[in-house]
Length: 273
Image 1: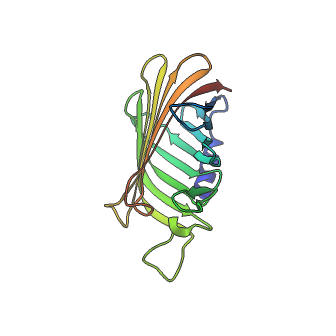
Image 2 (image 1 turned 120 degrees about the horizontal axis):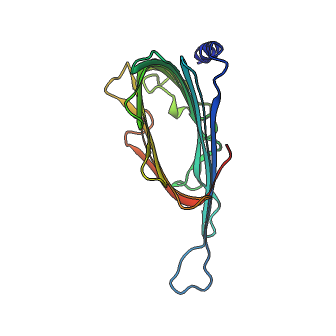
Image 3 (image 1 turned 180 degrees about the vertical axis):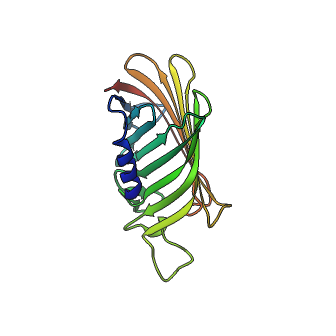
């Protein structure tokens, strides 16, 4: 990964010095509160909050494009007299460097990383069991290949990739079941990736962004890791947005069943840059 980052940085130094960064940083805060006092129909007091932050820094010149994006989300929820529990927790960073050939197909180099801020718990046990933490697991992927912008809405890329799963106290995410004597805290895989980005302005006040990431280990081409993130943002007013996020994940090494997370929120939204 360090070699690929170094390569991107060296090539970046050859860019047109007149090229400027196009910057976007958007943050949001969502709050929900419900309270009951002698309410005959019944109900539980509830409170939840979530903070979201996304950024996009893009530098374009005649020969190169360097796109850096990030997504951060964290939130808690409480129902009744229970303690606050985590309802959202995500850190995802991506850097994609593309060489412009003047044709529809352009070679690229990319680095991605994904983890969480704080500990995660399984609340089906009593007491709750801690099952994850910051960089435990952490996922990294480095790739080289070629990309195509199909139209103004859809871009896709395909390439060879390296993937690392890093753990410390929870090696269940990285351990190789075929080596029962040894417990691995790092799993490295060589394979192929496909990444498709969709940025569709549905209406003047609604925007859909989708990202479909596929990774297949060369050692098991019949097993494809899937990460499909969908976000629909509807602008209610200048500072109020409604967001619907549906994320589907499949990784047989973690669970033989697909995982789905869905959130819907309305709250304050502010564009910093």
